Structure formats: structure tokens, C-alpha cells
Length: 386
Ligand code: NZQ
Ligand code: ZN
Picture (tube, rainbow, N blue to C red):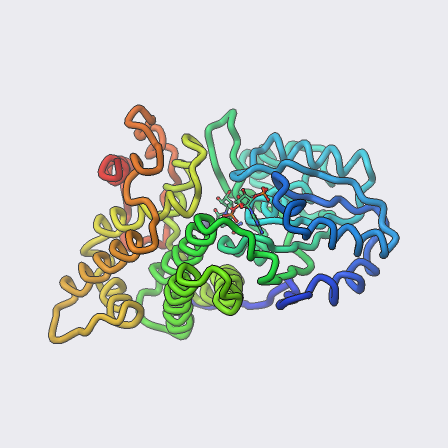
């Protein structure tokens, strides 16, 4: 294993009624002006908004609402939130939603405390923000695990970049599986595939020899696969959802990454696909993963072969590494089809006229990937996904 330091700042309150039992005590620790941030309004339809507003009012908070945070949040939206926070002297941000709301607020929390433009500060001056408005997250859509880290994926429409920005960690995250019961099944599946992707992209990093982080990772992947199937079979299976919401957090709470340099090449490519098409993140990953993985052979065969046996239950039966690696990618492809995720850009409504060369050229190449891709190879991957 590589040398590492491990500590984690996010306190997790997990389980049904977690907001009612934990939020009053958390709110007592923060100032009176609260920014209540959410997306397009699903929380108003399923009762989560009313429940949280009641808790905030009972805690004597003055609430400013920051609404309409879109999927794939934009930098413009971050600036809107930061201005709102400054104008209303916000002491605390409560972010309620999926990865988009949770990410957007991480950067709002930093931008509201600085005059400089945070995009330029991080990308041109290579600075790291150090002053933040404290925050809590209430997860209503699982998958990204965004509540567990301080990276936010923000779309800069002017620069045509969907890129990581570094913001604050949440002080706490509330994970109540009951809040996720109204998630559209398409989002349950694409979100959970995102969790599987995070696990795989962590596993595929280096060192490439099996270690404790990887063995926990294999269990996480098996768990996600099993519980996606269980949730499709019975959408009301709250036990399966509680496994998925925690597996999503596990994939991003640092434990699987201990002692590893992660891969995340598929994510970098998908993010740029998102910058150019505004596509659903998990669906984009589903189309890209099998194709990218075929291009990672033979360099990644050792890890692929292990995934075939330890995650997908394929019997080694004297097969060589190359055959098992192929079996793994076949199993992943079949699973993607089985759970109804798209297998081509056409199925996602991404047209032939998309500027795939610009997407490939603007994609970050990662250090932990088993194969050192060139931009030309990434273009080949994208072209094969059409
Ligand atoms: O906006 P509302 O009306 O709330 O509807 C949302 C949205 O349309 C809906 N939804 C959420 N909870 C619901 C619900 N609908 C009914 N009932 C509920 N309980 O779900 C839709 C999708 O929400 P969104 O937050 O966009 O999805 P997701 O959680 O997949 O987040 C995607 C964003 O996270 C980024 C992605 O790139 C994308 O921008 N990621 C963030 C990561 C991180 N910070 O660690 C890691 C990921 O790799 C990812 O890149
Ligand atoms: Zn992801």
C-alpha cells in the first residue's frame, strides 16, 4: 500500500427519521441565518421540504431559499447562490437533494467568503479556498456520494468545461432511505451505476496488487450490483435502498481510496461529454465504461481478471488472465443492458453532430489509469460509443 493519512470530517446520521432526531441539535450549533438550498422542487412534492422547514422554524432560524439548482450545476448558479449568501449574511447552508445540489453548495460556501472568482482562483492561481460557510447535507437521491467529499463537479458553460472545483466538506450528512422512495427509477439506476463506477475507478488505480482497500471495494461492488437488482424487482424495498445509499457513501468516503492512487479516467471523459451535451452522469458512464475498458487491455488485464472472479462470480476454470478480463467486460456490458441503462450515445439522444474531438481534446488524462491514454485514443473510444 502507498503511504497514507486517514481522517474524516463528515458526521453521518443514517436511517429513517434521521432529520427529526439529529437536525435540531446540529442547528443549535450554528447562526440564525440559514440558506435552504434545493433543486427543481421534488422536495416540495414528497413532503421533505415541509418537514425540514418545520424543523428550521422550530429552531428559530431565519430561512433564505436558494432554489432551482439544476442537474449538472453551472458556475452561474454557484455565483447566484454565493450572492444570495452574501446579501443575506448566511451563517449556515442546508443542502437538500442529490449530487447536483450538494456539489453546488460546496462551492457557494467557499465563493461567498471570497471576493476573487473561485474558478480563476483554483484553475489559474492554483489556490485552495480555506474559509467556508458551514454546511449540512440532506441526501434525497443517492449515487454520487457527493455528501462525503469536498470535490464539486461544476459546469462552466462559457469555457465548455465540466470540472472539479474544491470546496468545503459538509459538517454532517443526513442519509434517510425513506427520503429516496420517490426518486424516479431511472435515477435510482443511473445513480447506483455511478456508485459502481466510483468503486471500479478506485479499484483500477494503483497499486494494482490486491490490498485491504480493494477487498472492501470488491464487497462494495457486489453489494451495489445485488441491491440494484433488488430495487428494480421491488421499488419499495427500503432495505435495498438503505444499502445503496450507504454503498454510495462508502465509495466516496475515502475508505476504498486508502493507500491508492485512483483511476477516474472514465469520469474525466464523461464529465467533458456532460459539458458538451448536459447528459445524465450515470448514463454517460454506462455507455463509456465497457468501451473504455476494452481499450485498457492488456494493461489492465490483471485487475479486470480479479474483478471477473471476485465480483462477477465467474469461475476461473483454468482460464488465462486475458480470457477472464474479457469475461469481466462482457459481464459488465450484460449487466448494463439488464438494468436498462443505455449502451450507445444514440440511445441517450446524443447526436452524431456532437463535437467528439473537442470532448476528447479537453478531457483530463489521469495518472492512476493502467493505460496512459492519448487524446486520439479517447476520440476512438467516443467514436465507438455512437
Ligand atoms: O431537482 P429536483 O426536483 O430535486 O429533482 C432531482 C433531479 O431531477 C431528482 N430527485 C432528487 N431526489 C429526489 C428526486 N426526485 C424525486 N424524489 C427524490 N427524493 O433527481 C434528479 C437528479 O438529481 P441530481 O442531483 O442531478 O443527480 P445526481 O445525484 O446523480 O447528481 C449528479 C451530479 O453530481 C455530479 C455529477 O457530475 C452531476 O453533476 N457528481 C458529483 C460527484 C462528487 N461530488 O463526488 C461525483 C460524481 O462522479 C459526479 O460527477
Ligand atoms: Zn460519478
